[in-house]
Amino acid sequence: MGESPENIMSGKRKGSGRSRKQSLSRSSRAELQFPVSRVDRLLRESHSSHRLGSSTPVFLAGVLEFLTANILELAGKEARSHRRARITPEHVGRAVDSDQHLSHLFEEDSTHHREALQPRED
Image 1 (cartoon, rainbow, N blue to C red):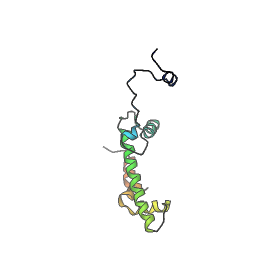
Image 2: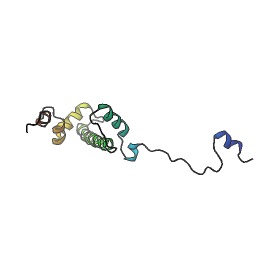
Image 3: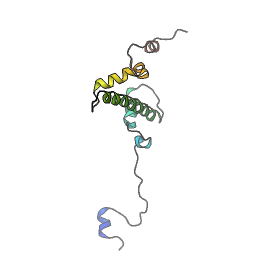
Image 4: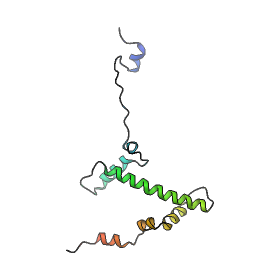
């Protein structure tokens, strides 16, 4: 007469020693805060490429998280230098403008952008 009423009601079976391992998100496996699955979905929906590797959205989420962390760190320093407790959009703008690499990355009129859009003449 094997099972107790508590186990029958809870759906537990006697002798099923295997417990199912909890699934981990791709973000937690990669130790990222940015959502890898959302980046993957957005890449696939954009039809920017016919084929995507499984590590592509993980890498892109890592790059986005790295850039965001650096910008927020610089904006936090900018806010502290002006004796403010909160980061405002002005602090973010000043932080990006004050950093050489970030300002080059976000500049709108870059010759690299124009060169990439023009077809090569061979």
